Image (cartoon, rainbow, N blue to C red):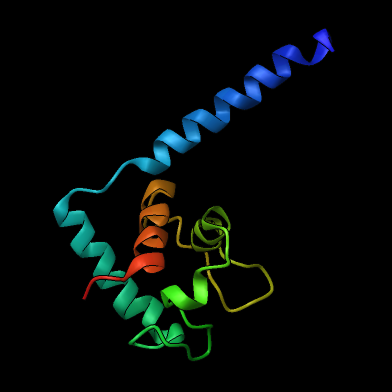
Length: 109
């Protein structure tokens, strides 16, 4: 049991750091850019009103049972073998988490 203690502390530390990073909110100008990106780029597959299209709907009622971390990872890394591309070239992991938070409540216009 004692042999696993350093690993446990390390894993807990990584989780804490990643959670802290995901909690960061982009500044107002960047929020506007991200909103535009979601409405235009994501909207091209998920529907301009996010009610679905080639991709699934991204409305709060459609996402409520999905884990936020998984949704953020899907945005950031994409889904290999599907039309969902990775967006990591255009945003940070914290920004992907911010987008998920907004999608799960009510995405701004």
